[in-house]
Amino acid sequence: MPPMKRKKEEEATISEPKTKYDRQLRIWGELGQAALEEASICLLNCGPTGSEALKNLVLGGVGSFTIVDGSKVELGDLGNNFMVDERSVGQSKAKSVCAFLQELNDAVKATFIEENPDTLISTNPVFFSQFTLVIATQLVEDSIVKLDRICREANVKLVFARSYGLSGFVRVSVQEHTIIDSKPDHFLDDLRLNNPWPELKGFVETIDLNASDPVAHKHIPYVVILVKMADEWTQSHSGNLPSTREEKKEFKDLVKSKMISMDEDNYKEAIEAAFKVFAPRGISSEIRQICNDTCAEPSSNSSDFWVMVAALKEFVSNEGDGEAPLEGSIPDMTSSTEHYINLQKIYQAKAEADFLVMEERVKNILKKIGRDPSSISKATIKSFCKNARKVKVCRYRLVEDEFSNPSVNEIQKCFADEDYSGAMGFYVLLRAVDRFTANYNKFPGQFDGGMDEDISRLKTTALSLLTDLGCNGSVVPDDLINEMCRFGASELHVVAAFIGGIASQEVIKLVTKQFVPMLGTYIFNGIDHKSQLLTL
Image 1 (cartoon, rainbow, N blue to C red):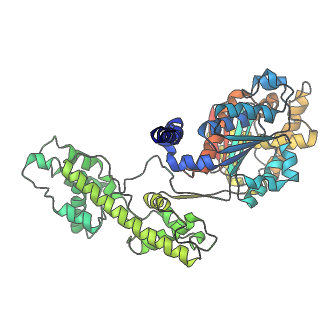
Image 2 (tube, rainbow, N blue to C red):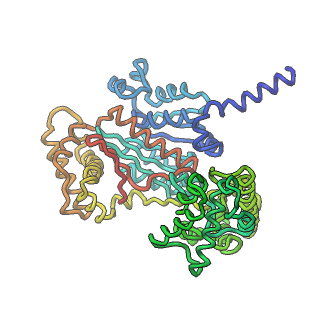
Image 3 (cartoon, rainbow, N blue to C red):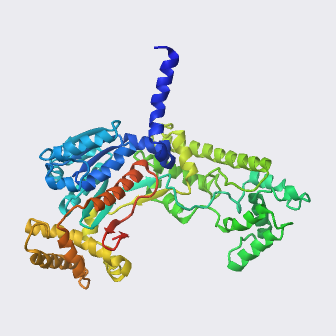
């Protein structure tokens, strides 16, 4: 094959994933996509909830998946599961769903195991240690508790999902989840307007706010205006920034007084951005708490994240002078091209200098704890520096702890709150139906006849559960109990698709280590069209 043709074919092969996953790459980037493509997912039960969750991940380009389900496809499955068809009836459900999902993305490796997940949990717990993450759908409480303990011990991430009639829940369970790129919806630009470093201060001093040329005056960047105004204010206020409402208004009036005409957009931007000056200097209380965490004392077992946190702690106390590494980017603003480019270079140079200091500190810590000094890549350290003010640490309670010792105050508060009472009722009933099943070997309302008896039994079971939780005075509305029995443990496709979508979204957060996963139990109430997060 001619060299040019071979080269073009290689380039096409490399660019194919970028084209294929173009839209999602804009959300979680190449690092996030790489993490997704390296992930190995295990799905327990491939009914509509599990199939919908896994479908989203297959389309997203997850590396591989294994389906565990011991059931056969029945006629009823054709009405709520798009991953099976008439030809699948009587065949292995795991095999059929696996084949359908493989068709959606042939780059994903797919396998299946024809076995009941409950049996696997009880007899072969080591099986789960090979996966990055397990999605457990439609499990009863006993299996949920066992699997949670297994995955914690194996350090495997776990997402529970269940749809039940017009209700459902999703819960993440992992001992600790650390996030570098949390992508908050709103976050203050890292401009250091009230704490400029020498180079920024030096640049600001070269620009005269009293310039007589009106064109030059209306092209001074608002960063320069606010740094000068903040300096002027602190000099006349004993080094303090505006803090009260009156002082903040006075500061804005001070900025406004520097305008020489009413069409100066740069000064209007400065007045609108004045709140950025009022932000307290230094790191936030949340970042300080992370820096003071016991895990920030590095050892040979420390994760890369905690090694970098240890370096951040040292940086803040030394070179940072109370601040985290600078992000290095500036927003768009009215400015002359020359001023904007110079400003951009100053911020980028400071960010690069901070990164080099952090890189050196990370290497020194790795050396101290007996690890390869270059084991954490430059790209990872750079990403950490850029997001140092936004890092997050999520820790989740064991499901067993939540089930046996929930916050009674939270439960009572939710029952008393009109917005949360429905979600709390479904939370209790989704647990009560499992107790009901353990006692009567069927779900309430699952079979024709005996509905009134099932309603009475479920009510008794729910009250017993509330008593065990220490909530003697709380009651679940009769309407909800009746509805729960009417559901008959059915998986409606529309609800399953919604719950599966929420579950796959949480999986992507956990695998890419971007965005913040839900803390608590997510309850979907399809009757009232409400979604609530309960932290018990």
